[in-house]
Image (cartoon, rainbow over the protein chains, first blue to last red):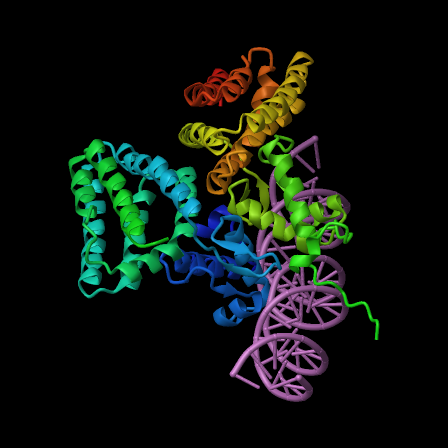
Length: 239
Length: 239
DNA sequence: TGGGTCAAAACGTGATCACAAATATATTGC
DNA sequence: GCAATATATTTGTGATCACGTTTTGACCCA
């Protein structure tokens, strides 16, 4: 019997190159989760917007199960919240919550940025590569600002930060910060939309320059100022 | 027609006292989640222990759906992790992760404790009530230490901290800290079990005294020292 | 025109089934 | 005895249904 046995998908051999298995398992509920997560962090969903299991499922062209699981995860992370009648909506913002999130961001994000330099110690090539990548994102960001495209602004702003943060290889910190962005993302979009993007001074260039120079103090200050600027801009609009 | 219409469960009227509706909706998957969450935070599940949807469902006497949803949430919070073959297990600890968690705890928990005093400003009665409650938990904790009961130690230690933290009325901070405890809980239990509880100096009494005295500096220091002590004890055992 | 009523639609939740993949157990061959 | 193979069991995942509740929207009457 020369039956070809199915190769266990996760056997150590499954990743040998040439074996043509580039296709990852492709778990549906994970893809739904990732898409929704990105949409929320980058401010594509307005606060208070209600979601439903069936609605999401239809939108993504999947059945209800994966949509349920994705929603559950985002509820656990504080991105979505349940009304008193168990309906799901994008989390709303209020003054207390905003001040908590801002303070927590200040407590975590500069440190997370600092960890990037620790991680890339004596790897100036890797730092340079990351700096270039970040500059490109920041340039796209600038163009979004010029044309007053607040949706694109929110998107590339989050992309800039997380591209940097991911380089820290600090999954715990990253998870905490992601949770904060999931909670503030929808609100940021609204604020930027109301305020316009013109008054935003760009701390990102400072951060990139600090990254190139391997200057921890400068980098943490840039991130700190970036957060503070966002806060004062928000404070200028009424919460 | 004197038909008795069913009272909408969440109508504003539904909570009027005397209307006999003390029975909350009782969502099964939420109860499973809470039980499992508590078990993990208080160190009742060892790292690496595998769970299964059907196994959990059987253990709690429910169907698979609520178990699935509870697991999803705890995966999102980093308490459970997926193996490469998508099986679920209690998250393992490693040195890097431990140092991240410890640092994040130092960044968040003292501040969260400080917020308790902000919240209870000029409410010495409320502070005293909380102090009494915490003292009771701490006394139970001492008895657990005396008889070397590391399971009870882990449980009442988490109870002490969260009873304090909940009084801060800072849901965002609380969520972040909960996520950290969910990740470190199983490992703490192991460490305490290996080490015994005898060498643990009790910073809790300092914290309670600071709470009574409305002394922010002393309170944050007590929490900080409590975390640091735990870390050095862990460092003394090999990770 | 505006508020109250009621039927219809949409919703969250729990239950159960099917299927392929992964793990555990039994069996075989040497 | 012991590794290799084959069988059986367990597992995560997606799909679908049923039930009671909530929300919506049309309608009516004042």
